Image (cartoon, rainbow, N blue to C red; front, side, top):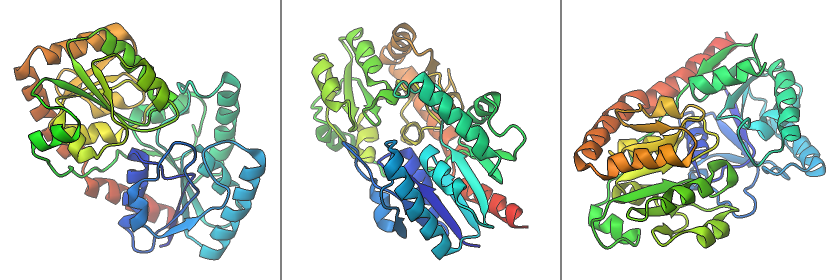
Length: 357
């Protein structure tokens, strides 16, 4: 069984690690991907993978470049002759599912664009119509999170197709001694520290995090990540917010006390699973499948995408070291059980074998 995974670009983040884990686990699997663009950085996991570069492919929509990328990808598929082409994210899913051939087609939704402010209403409408059409050319659809799948089917995407929800499998990161981790984050004392780690771009809504931090001047925040809004976030950050750029995740989650996510759109964010595996309670917006990653009231708080409820949730954890410890312990136990790597790999393997039978 030969599986070719296709993704537009492997930028630093949970989706890249999800795809990388699938490719690494299968000695016959290959990865076809384009290039990161702008302020993005490519995830280090790519260095360990058998990669076929798709010329001209990236996240940005450009009709000429996208057509050239289609031709490049079509040649790769014809040369590789895969049994299954498994695409991830919209651009790769569009191009790979337009390529003709007798191979089986699988597509994974790592989230959706319905709440992504970086896309206009018209762009979202066009993408939705395209996904409805492409679903008819797909043998199996995967959602990373049950809620994401429900919302896609409610939008009329793949309602009559085979769906399966497969949560990400995540390994616990190495622990770093707290004082060393804090020094690496530029923190010299034992104050309670809230950590925000993500791409610094509109869909992650870093400006909502800034507004929350302004309401909590006695709490320190550290922001890790890079992206097209990095300079804007640095300029808007109040004195209690430190913006450090990309940081090692093991150092980051070893040094902070509370994780914060303010995203407009998510699948099942790997960063928040990594935080919980490190024993860090999470406060996040109620979008995508965040509510499946965080058990609100037990491992953290899932709050409305507004300043006031996020502030209230952070204050509860900030003022009680006992609550932080209790939530952190519960988070670590639950994440270990729910997001194991073997289960994720087994579910994909079973899906592939079922399609080929």
